[in-house]
Amino acid sequence: MLSGTMKPHGDAPPVPPILVKSLVDDDRLTAMGLLVETYAGVVDVFERELESLGISGSSFEVMIRLARSPDHRLRMTELAAQSTLTNSGLTRLVDRLERAGLMSREPCPTDRRGYFAILTPAGLAKVEGVLPAHLITVDHILTGVLKPKELRVFLGALRKVRAVVRPTSDPEVAAALAH
Image (cartoon, rainbow, N blue to C red):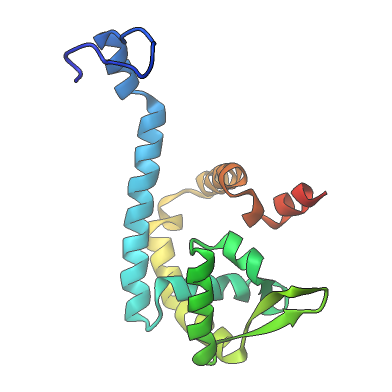
């Protein structure tokens, strides 16, 4: 396709090969490709590491969110917005974690349709037991390869992108959108 003229959609004129080449080499594609490749690599390392510690990646993702939340609780809708799980996937996971005694649910007093997910003391102990080894891995593959200033810039950049693609996952952005 690069050697010939690219056929665009609709009635648009053909794109000359030189322009196709410059589009293929666009830094935006490089940024997206690096992000996807890095994410896949990080997830692969974390999944294997967490499994070796006796917890699935999705369980850890949900439990660490709750561990870092006030009173170790979040509304299910907030937890769904902050996780990579679908609503039904989150519900099934919370069901399993609840049966294991690591989480509980309680109705929201101000919204009879809403529920809070709550990390139990056993769930918090599980997270705390996994964290020392997990933080070594995080440092080895992510934070430790960046200088302190690079890490601050990286975190800022991730928050900016997240605010666009998942605005309700950031409590401050979600609050601003609600008003």
